[in-house]
Image (cartoon, rainbow, N blue to C red):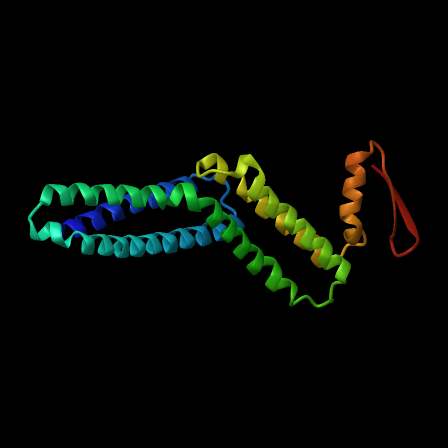
Length: 218
């Protein structure tokens, strides 16, 4: 029993070390705006929950392994038991590494929660009902941000430089939502317009102003 308790305590120290390292790096992010603080708080909650999940998994895992070592305990082969527990602890930690295997998923979950709280829920309370085209445009912008966090190598990792990239993504999301909320005349066509601007040196855009039409040269 003491050997198991020692292994559990060792594993918990390792988990705490990983958690503290992540939290330290998060605290070093330059951006201190409210949206970042909200995202950071959610991410830390997810990390704490995942850490507790790993602690429970390891406790159960060692309980099963200790049952299989009962005969060795009876024969007092303590050296062999200690070696086996050490090996099993290392194997578990190798297969269940919070930083290497989970941090990207947790970062993405935190982004989804941010979108849910600041966009999805809020848009259900707008005074003027948005058009289906406007909703579709907003969803496409949001999906672009999701893909950036998932696939852009500059965002993948758990160092300060990786976390420093996230506040700009959050700000971009809120700009997209603010344009959606104010229902600007060109919003529904914004994706197509951005594609044209990227593909052409000069682009002319005509839009209604309420008293006629206005042309803009880009």
